Image (cartoon, rainbow, N blue to C red; front, side, top):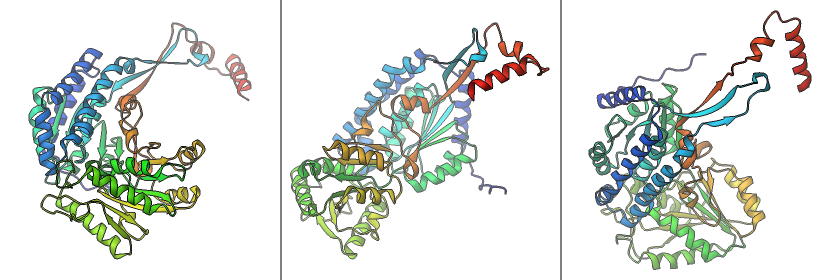
Length: 480
């Protein structure tokens, strides 16, 4: 049975010209050395360092109001740390790996695995952490010796225009180029014959990206999202759990793919947990219209959150507005955070990723109930068990599959440079960050070096009856 042929996609001239220039540059210098790669990474870092205020301002303009502290901490600082970590370890990562030799190829033979550049890599960047999710992958892509084309989100127009303007001052466009989105150009970008394509975003868009990449058999790394749960065990202090979960839930107004999407608390403890959250929020954010609380990215997302909340209300949930007395502000897109108690599975907020400052609170009576609930749904990008009981902790880690795990905290596994980051199942495929990023964007090329003497040629040549058959029988006896 023949597979259906996708409809052709028109590739804009600027995409095609840049791709062809980068491919030509790669073919002219297919494997840059350590010194050249270090210089490229240094230039990438300078781009960020020398334009700090402009980058922060551009991201703020795209959001309407983006906390400058959150931009500096979760994006600017993380990017520079990532580049520094990559530069520190790059020499070690680039070394060919020694591998064992099969006994029939002795003497004098060698096996090596050589990490080599793939060529031209495409990166599709979401709007929620646009600097972080562009430059952290770029650190790995460029460290592996590749060229890169980066398409920013349509919600990051100010930042995209700034990066497209700044980047050629630091690196030639046949090494790195940024592009703005808009006008339906996303499918065209993902249809280019890249040697690898990294996409970060929603599952629905990820499916479309993967289908477009399949036109060219382009391998993909998909970093998606999903409904990441937190589980507060009976032994864990409820106030401490509320403090840690609320911090990450309010970061970037909840617009994080690895955010806590819903939380399990022991049955009978939901009101106490909610009271802790209300007290902590009032202390941290006395006025959500202040600069510390980030806006929702656009009117469509704002309207989706309103619909999600009203759907829960209409279906009988108890809603707690943490910003007491403050209502959604459409003009500034400031959305007051809400806890949702008694959520049911027919509510929108339990059927799709929330991606905003709404936190459903579910109750449970035993650990198996929690595991069964999570496992009956798509595998999440992250899992957050809160417990001091090592056996309970290990139960959740071994019985509930997710992309990554933070124990007694949320989100922070993503910030560990030496841990791979990636989803599983519906939350994504592939890894990057640190060494795993370098490996993802490299071809681990196996190379066999024959020595001056070749036993195969001497001992196993036809006619097979006689010595070759005797040798083969001896080999078979060794393995049976």
